[in-house]
Image (cartoon, rainbow, N blue to C red; front, top):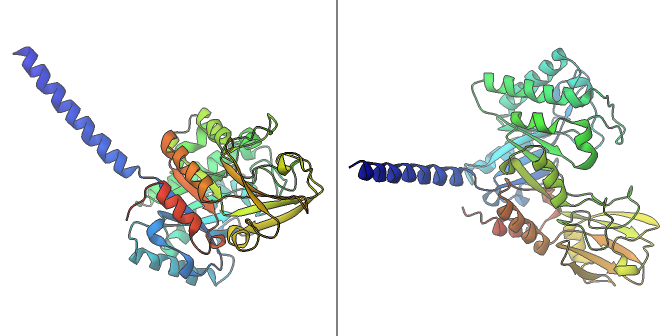
Length: 370
């Protein structure tokens, strides 16, 4: 009798665990987060292929409050809210900050300033009927973008997020809180092991690894390092592992993708310009522009790095190297996300993919069905 009861109990517990797993798996469907810039035509947005939109950008005003940069933002937010008619589960977040955006250090510096910031954020979300806030502070404790930075930013950033969460929770509504993060020295100036508890998820900026400030060319959004990369070069996998090592749950990590490429001129031709010194940084080009004018056109030949899981363009005549992402690299990132049970993929930014090719690759790769 005892054995029979034990067997029945095991079956019941097993059934309950299976039900819980099923519910959690359903709730944990991969996020597809699009950064949408001010001025993007709503007709370019496919809400059925997205779970979240981060509208970029709101600012921090002279009083340390979250504010819209100009009156034309409110009508755009209204248009974004209108997309919920086609996808009722779509969430709209207001992204604050961006490269060269100042005000964060002052907003986080004291208990009073943090409370003022949090209250203003809550008021703006209510006023615009939005679902949450995304903080894109580039970067705490670092002034490379010409913004104010303090050593105390490290602890103050955690306290700012704590205050936001407290104010949002006290409102009786679960407003989302996310941040955009980087790797390497970003961790030296933040308390990633502590602050993540206040966040719904983290948008990991796994791009811009190679740019005008690096010594060589390289895959600016590579999933892995190339075979020619230096040991200290950056890549997406290493960035994810650094976040995981800080104790951040895998399902809180949203892997970043770039809908643009970075071009370098006067490049050493060894290895078709990959991980080679260059004479000048040419600039950034949207994927739409690359597809129209450069990919396998005008002397540019597409190459695929099977180690890094990344494409690149090489023009031997002009010694020009272009790092970018395409459907093949995004499919590889989607497989990586599924294999490592990450929280999804985000990208900067939607208008750079005018024909929807890249978003289709992400949507298909993460198996989103609506």
